[in-house]
Length: 79
Image (cartoon, rainbow, N blue to C red; front, side, top):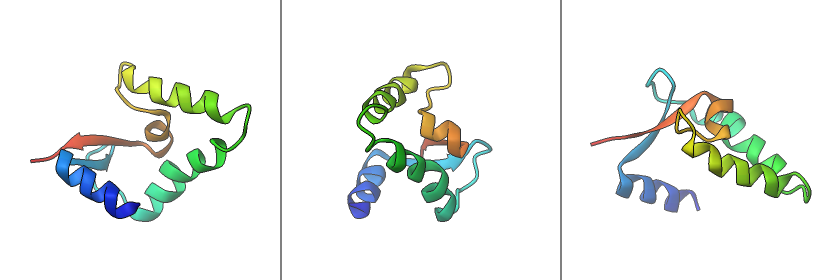
């Protein structure tokens, strides 16, 4: 699964960086960006609602999902 994500990101030429534009350590990506989502999504009442609003958040002013706000990250285009 991780190989597909890396392959997909390299195909789209995107990278996850901090709000300051620096590379984010792997532990921070896992603990702050992915883990909260993995914990919330399985709950029947809250999970689907959170997932729905998380996906809609990308259309907000900052173009960032909730997991990006939690981890203080952003996705950028690379060359």
